[in-house]
Length: 119
Image (cartoon, rainbow, N blue to C red; front, side, top):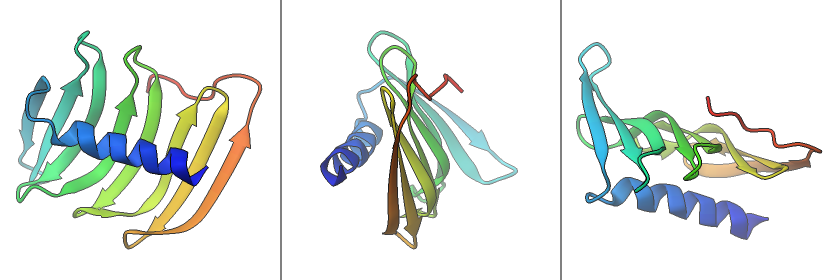
């Protein structure tokens, strides 16, 4: 279970770091954030989120597979992992609770049908 979560987190960070990946950037002057959307090679959104102007991940980040189905919902506060993170894998839902960049709880559920939507 932890291995799967760590792989998902590593995937999320790796995808964010690739400069060659197609992306759209938009400056949100009200929030002083850079909103970004990354795309898979097939044109489907791979991630959405925001950076602070000094390059730290901030707010909600969503990750999608190449078919556009949500796989990850993550939260950052000035580069630190915070709050509830969710990972969807088929019929499994994993919830990881972070406080100040540290895991404080992990829960997992199995359901009879896929739980993630495209939103």
